[in-house]
Length: 137
Image 1: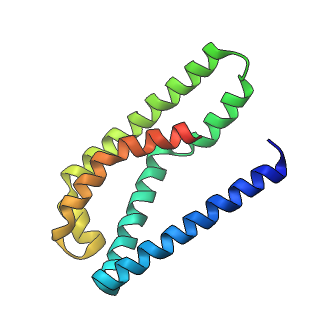
Image 2 (image 1 turned 90 degrees about the vertical axis):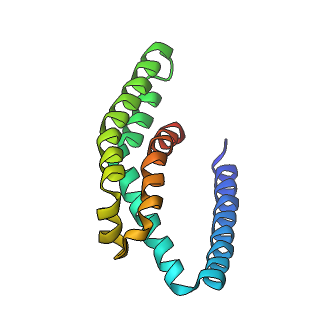
């Protein structure tokens, strides 16, 4: 793929992402108000922080080693399997801790315990999200 074609695809993807974000946040602002938008923002920040902890930079390393071993299928499979094991090993304690202490974390993040159920859902969804980030890498 050429640089121009890649840049064009990236431009199109960015335009769609920004447009989608504007529409979603406008709908959120209209239907739940500024406090709802703030809660969604805090929740998204918590999610991205936890996924960052769970993947711990494995995406960059995975990309490097998959490119380095592009001709050796067995070595690539070993690298990918190892990265999934490491991410799951880091993710399990984080997810369990978030699930168990969701009431306390909800009070800490949102100054209310009523969002603990959302944090439990986040704890359950962290594994597929982190593994999906590895597949993207």
